[in-house]
Each structure stands twice: as C-alpha cells, then as structure tokens.
Length: 445
Ligand SMILES: NC(=O)c1ccc[n+]([C@@H]2O[C@H](COP(=O)([O-])OP(=O)(O)OC[C@H]3O[C@@H](n4cnc5c(N)ncnc54)[C@H](O)[C@@H]3O)[C@@H](O)[C@H]2O)c1
Image (tube, rainbow, N blue to C red; front, side, top):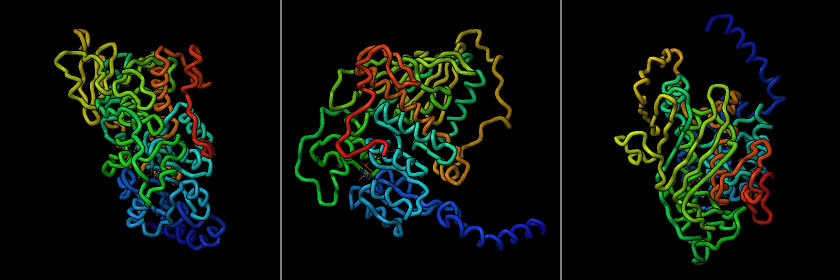
C-alpha cells in the first residue's frame, strides 16, 4: 500500500464509526462483507449448497421435516430454525436477512421467490423456477421491478461449465452459418401410474400439511419421501400438483445449453406431441416445439425439446444421439453442432462448408469462465447485480418450456402473445396457463 492510499484508508477507517452507525450494521454492510442468508429446504439439494453457504452468514433455516431441520442446524448452529417459510420471511427484518436460497420442492419455488422479492430480498431458487406459465410470469415481473437492487439466480449450476461459453462463441461466430434450429433433449424416464394411495399417518417430525403447501390435498404416502438426499425430487416431481416432470427437471438444465446461445425471449407459437394425457402424472415421452422471432444477430429460429425416449433425428447415421443422455443440437445453413454439457462436435455439412467463412476468435475475445455459480450470485447480492441465470433469462426459458405443456394439453399448435401472456388462437388453452391453489396460499404475497 503506498503512502497516499494508506492515509486515505486510515482516514476513512477513523471516520467510519461516525458514518456507519447510521446504517445497517449487518449482512452485506458488515466489514466482513458477508451476506445474511436463509436456507429453505435444509437436506437433499440444500446440502449441496452447504459449503458455498458456509462462506456467508446463514442466519435462518427452514424445513417442514424437523429431522432435516436438525440436520441443517448441525452445520449452521447459529441459525434460527423454522418449519414454515412464511414465518421465516415475516422475521426478515429481525433476522437482518439479505437473501434466501430455496431448495424446497418445485411447487413452492415461485411462491417463496415472490414473497422474498416482495420483501426486498435477493433470491437463489433451485430449478425449475415455476410450475405454470402464470407463476413464471409473476416471478419474472417481480424480479424486473426490483432488478436495480435485487439479485436472482436459478439453480442451473451446470451453466458454469465452460462448454456453455464455447457453444455460444462457435454459433455466434458463424461456425454453422445462419442458425435456424436448436434442440435439446433428455432421456430420463420415470413412469408412474398416478398419485400414491393413502398409507398411514405422516411421522410426527414431518409437517405434511406444510409440505403440501399450495398444492391441492393428496393423502400422505411415504413413497413421496423415499429417495436419497438430493434425489428425492424424483419421488414427486412427475405429479402435476408437485412438479412438471422432466420439463422442469432436466429440461431446466439442458434447455439452458440452448438458451445461453440463442438469446430468445418468449415464443410466438408452440406445438407438442407425446403420450396420452394423464391428469395425475406429467408425460414421460414428449416433444415440444417453439417458434421464436428474429433478433439482432439471427433470423427466426425453431427451438425444440425432446424427452423420455422422443429424440430428434441425427444429422448423420454415424452420430448416435441416443448415446448422449442429455444433449443439444444446433443446425445452421452450413452444418450442425452437437453437444452434451461438457463437450461439442462440429459437423460442417456439404462441400461448401469449407470453414473459410469461420474465424475463431482471438484468445483475448474468448468469454471468461464464470468463476463459481453460487459465488456469482453472492457477488451480485453484494452490489454487482449481474448473474447469468437471473429470473428474466430463466423466467423466459421456463415459460417457454411450460407453454409446451399447454400445447400438449390442448393437442394443437397454439399461437402465443408473450406481451399479454395469452394464447390467441385457442381460448381453451388459457385455462392451462395457471393452476388453482389450496385456500390460504397466495402466489404473490
Ligand atoms: N440444481 C440441481 O442440480 C438439482 C439437483 C437436485 C434437486 N434440485 C432441485 O432442488 C429441489 C429439492 O429437491 P430435493 O431432491 O432435495 O427434494 P426433497 O424432497 O428432498 O426436498 C428437499 C428438502 O426440502 C424440504 N421441504 C419440503 N417442503 C418444504 C417446504 N415447504 N418448506 C421448507 N422445506 C421443505 C424437505 O423436507 C427436504 O428436506 C427441487 O426443486 C429440485 O428440482 C436441483
């Protein structure tokens, strides 16, 4: 430190107590610059956040399962504990809370996110951000209102893999010519006939009514809770009232490979085909297709999502796309790029695709690594405000995916007015944009 800097910093330090006492003395304003955070869902996916959260102050924990709450409290013994996230948020001022990390099941995500944003809190929410088009729109609108002061991130943490940047560079730099089509797919298949039957009383450590939360009542069955830590979502996320199957699950991660490249907003049309509709369980085999208008660097494109055995055609028989469990493919006027989360292949197509039109970018122009997905959000909360998967980017992405389920429900191509959030050619489709919640639960509270 040179002398001038030393004098400036000591002068500031001397003046600091006079100034700082007038402001918040906790969270991001403390000299340690740590955030005061709450973790909602303290086992399972929540556990995967423990080490990142340990770099901040975890001041509150919430879980509807008291054993899971105790598990979280072992790691964060100074945190106040809650079984109802609404009570925790009621206490946000007393807790001097800066933000929340939401790792509870899908049917709570938009609720907790909205309530937290409405109370001036930063939000990290596990994927999927929403379960219906309406939820996606409300949570996005709440974020956009607060964008100048609040940071959001959806938990699609694979986004930090550098392959995301490499794909963006290749396609924006024209390796396949003009982009016309982008597909993502996932082959996970979890088939269930319907909601589980009533099977006894919930254990005394589980607040089952709070677990149901805004979802319509379904009787307790231990099967909803029989998965291992971090994988229990696969016991309930296929049931419509708790999730939307692979659309929100691996669809959130894998469509992100496409979304990070295409710079799309909301589609103007959606179409779907899949197995017969089951009113209790979301489809396993499904494909959904979307039309997106041109933007400032590309023409109109078609985006598609395939799951549960439905697959796009391979550009060449010698590339077996089914060998890629979760993948993406981009088609342009001069070829294809096929990718999984960590690697990609370029397939120039035809004799004219000699690649002379493509100039790899200079090292200095290569997109920098993200440097940690949770850290990006922590830094954003502390003032940078910039995250890669904020509720605008991820909100548009999940709205598109959920619109695919609406097209699936009505069984025809739907035209969508994204500004109004209405289907314009099939009035019956608008009923599927939202859901009924149990009495006493408010989405935008
Ligand atoms: N980003 C990823 O790679 C990834 C991986 C796994 C799961 N997830 C997501 O994380 C979320 C949780 O998945 P999981 O497998 O841990 O599920 P889970 O069923 O194990 O639930 C996680 C925890 O939340 C608690 N919980 C349930 N309802 C709650 C409520 N209303 N309030 C507070 N706590 C509540 C549960 O008791 C449990 O301790 C899901 O939305 C899932 O999509 C993301």
